[in-house]
Image 1 (spheres, chains in turn red, yellow):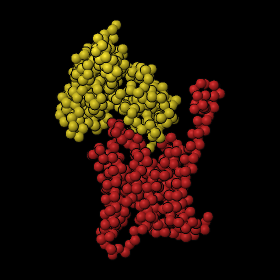
Image 2: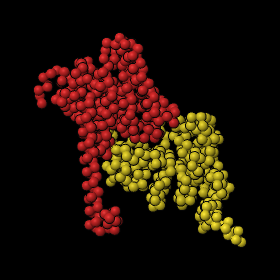
Image 3: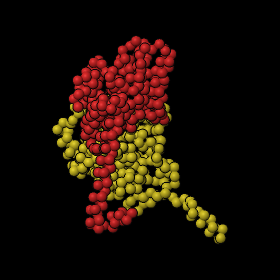
Image 4: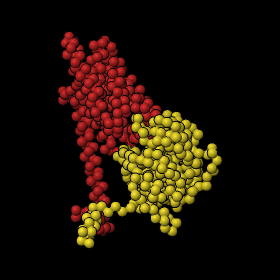
Length: 293
Length: 279
């Protein structure tokens, strides 16, 4: 249990994965409830394009990728806002794959690349540097503080974006702000999880939390806790089983989701059986009909 | 019949005023040449067929419709305004009932744009519960919104609109999809609020069951066709122009009832033809 903690790279990776898990758990709640699960997947690929472009142009990865991701998210919002017949999933599909394609095109054009982009695609916990860790902590703290201050506006905008403006909520600002924190979260998660696996970390913890509660506040708390735990357990599993860190975290999260699914179904079944038992005790004709059915 | 609140008819006492307004969405015109005045304390029903612009009229007051001509004043302020000028209850069909929010959380959304802390102050919470008490849903505060009856759901969203104590309340089809008892309860609740001074403006497609009980009705179909008390507005001519269909108006013991003129389509038509050829 404590043996791998003697390696500095492991401790850094463990911290990074746990914090990224909590961050994605928080941001993911809003993504899942807005039915935009695909956006995480898309933006991660778009940001991959941004990473290549910033490398080619010699700009700092974080700055280049974050600006790129934010612009992609804004473009998606703008496309769906201005053309009502283009649904969000289609807009995401166009903008993010175009951006990814640009990244691939640049890589194939400049074959002299010395840098490997494998980490950006599949995640590499061994490669987490001190600077990466600082970026992760910085973005996470900023995101939590911002979400706290905008909590009620974000909730209303997520629940009913059409009606929220009638209650004085500036949904255009909230949407842009959310695009910014989403882009930030994905950029710092890229190193740990990889573009191909980020979507899972954004979607699985909130959906698992949703299975366990009907209360929004509790869903947020649970999702953050589940995300962090999956990151923590996933890194340990990747060390002992010698598997890729991103894949390990996603598989642990999937396990948690399956457990929650079983728990939620069992709870429903028990409630149904209790209901039937109560009714048949009274001997109502409706319940006996239901039993026969 | 719900009783009209006697209103002051002095010129300055309009809460809503449309001055020759043409409006719509992204370049398409939904309503044109609308001139309209709603007095403070009025209780008004908007009737018209689907797609006639009833919801658009409400949303114009709320400031989310593009105004191409004329102007709209709400409480003396030109629309669109930077602050909410009316309480709004959306059509229940538009709500995501699977969303993990409780009744209490929905009502408190009425205060979403005030303050920056994630939780609500004690005063706001107390006010929310006083409103929920009044609406008879305080005991359901911790329930998820799907676990409510249609009438309770309507009350939760009415509660949200009332949290900011609006002078003007706009409701989009508040009586659609609920049973007769609930419909009456909701109408009486709105009548009570109206008597406390809240101006109520609601859309409805139920001309007999709902609009006939209101003191004032506005017939809309891309423009204002007519307005007045139901007994005066419900004429075959006006309703025909509003709905584009033949309507029969029956006056019976002080009640005005609207019926569609039978068209005799389908089986009865074939039957008639058969009778005709035999005779």
